[in-house]
Image 1: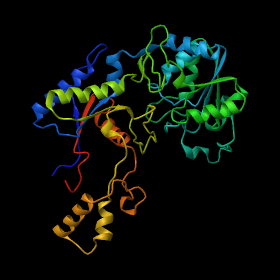
Image 2: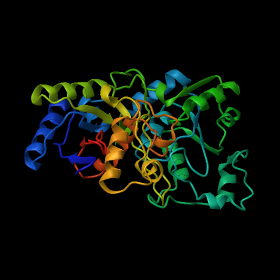
Image 3: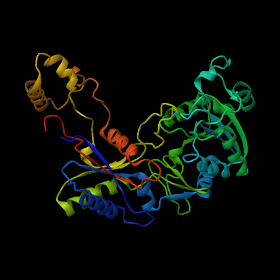
Image 4: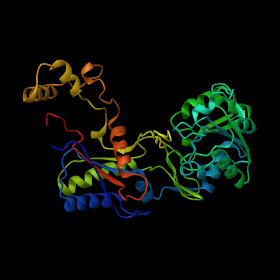
Length: 393
């Protein structure tokens, strides 16, 4: 009778140099033995990106970040555009950037960053006389219009916090506020786009407005600096604070680890499972308004069986329309037959309306991110079972 099961699995505390594939396989097998479940074909073993990168030792220091920023953007005035407001995700990166520049012009979007962290509530804009679509505010203008507002969950005034970080690293700090990225060109000709999912659009618009050098965070630490970690696809994107002077980067070996987990479990059990290394999933907090989504992708690496989108029928549509005159077992059998006979691609058909047309890796990764949490649960591995089953199975 069970449908989809998302099961958090405890693992040892993982350190640099550990065999992550063996640890995952051992942990899943131990959980199966202790909790009395069996692995089945198409089960999905998911591992949070954090422990994969940690086992691989994919770390970098603020000195490494500074060296790369200085080499690529000149070491003078650097415009830093649209960073997210996060002590965990961006603060240590900002320290490194400031260390590699004489002056940082920090341009923040308002009233929130791209993942929903708010400097102030949207309602505060009403009656302020500020047009968020066109107005560029200095720090003085921002304070006059909106005052000193702390984040409701963290208690941090991110404007003061980021300004202080820049100055602590010995750089001059200028803070401005705008929602069109090209506004930075008035203040700096060498620019680092620090937004995540809109970075290429920002880069294009800033370059078109006359900037001399424009990079994204994906282009900082996209190769080793003085023996540091790196990520050739995402650079600093997806990094997390490790210490006050180091970050853990997004894993560079995620695809290989996912494929190796599948091979290891097949060799041990004879069952071909799917595997995925996952980052932030999508969940919007109804009070704080933040979406997670601070990683550049949800599925950092995954096996072939997780490629694509769901291809599902909407059961309530069938029950209310095609089989409205049926009930009981007759209705159930009619729906089962329709599922068994469904086309391989239902895109655009009314019978699939409302069936969450998103990538499988984004859906499963979001499920896993909420299951594993980000605190002390100790379950960096999540086993998802029955995800590909349906009413007819």
